[in-house]
Length: 197
Image 1 (cartoon, rainbow, N blue to C red):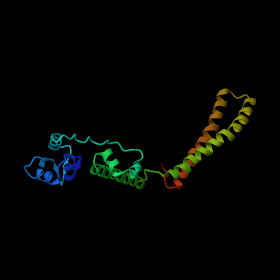
Image 2: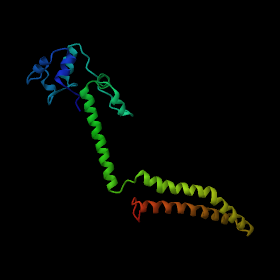
Image 3: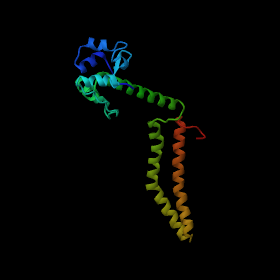
Image 4: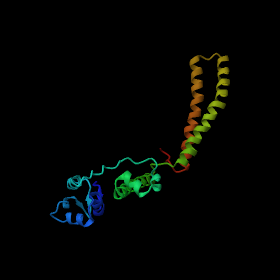
């Protein structure tokens, strides 16, 4: 994507009056190949050569990374924005591109939600993490008591170590099955999954 600047900005950079640049962009003139619509491509060789001849170092391209806190730009002066982006047009172009990206992401999320491929945080928090928390509490409080009581009875009856392992495994897996079933029922009730998912 070309970095576009106005003829007025080009005149400021070159240290000439705007009519000088307007004459130089006419068909057949030196800067005409750099015209894109009504603006000039700042990186076009003709522009770079002209600015260099005038003793001006062309502006480097702006950083393409999106800052973490884009709202910080709201408090910046135009001078600070130009120092960071090179020109107000480049900042505007960058902002429009960012807006387009955000709109595309928003549409993609809405489409995925409409297709049933996304689940809201609230539903996951309530029905999945809620079920995990309840199972966690049972596994740490109730299950050890149940396992200890049944193990004691099994040992007294002379059951083999393999049978004790199976007993412990069955008691723990019963809690995990309850977790899975509870989470699935909650997600189904919320319309987040269907019966066969």
